[in-house]
Length: 334
Figure 1 (cartoon, helix red, strand yellow):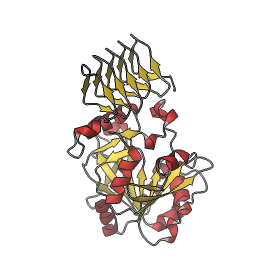
Figure 2 (cartoon, helix red, strand yellow):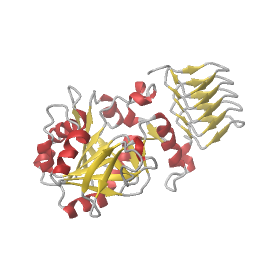
Figure 3 (tube, helix red, strand yellow):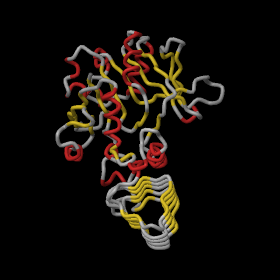
Figure 4 (cartoon, helix red, strand yellow):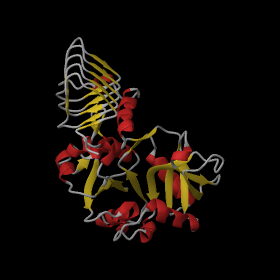
């Protein structure tokens, strides 16, 4: 089975981390987000994936020189201009010649980390004879999302954008993973910008061709600062992630330092009496003595006695000794 993986965003929300590393290659518990996604796709029966990119593929080629990731063969579709979601899917599918295969194919959003059983999603899709099926996931506050309403059989009835209280009983939102029939590509020519959320899916609803598959599995959009850090910490608490993966063997951590619910990457250094709490230290970063890092992701250097909370520190970022920062980006990359 083939897949299109949407990784074309510029990672604006995660700057300055993404100035050095494309968002899909940022680590989640010391393994690239893309590799975790590909492993999930492989378990669901995907053998080949095309990465839909809005810029050069060189970082991905360097990361996966054999063009294989988690057992999935990779190809690349690089847009010469932004095509939006449906445009990107149509373009990438044709670049990978998916339209020549008479089989369903999967589309996955490269920001999402979840426990979705891809094979179960495909099975549900085929059982309904749908042209497309969306994975749906519940949220606590539907007013912040586009909510999807379905009938008891799963047929999508309508989309409700940021509903007000009482406007809908649904708490399910688009989870970012889809199954399509090849015939759906007729709706996505891939030659001009086209939105799957605003154009393609509503068109399918009008034609009765769109279904939703709702699960309550773990799901997180790791493309935002707070959720990127949380995704790392969440994985530490999962049975499949062992504590040894949380701290790289090549990291140098002072005996008096405290590392709590945090991920420490390769070649990191943590000084005497430093405290790392619910945070991610990416490869090569350093935290000097008596510094405190909370709910943050760090690529650069944190000076001694500094206090950093809910911050992103890029590879060229340096927090001076004694500084106190909250909700900051270093360097400022907004």
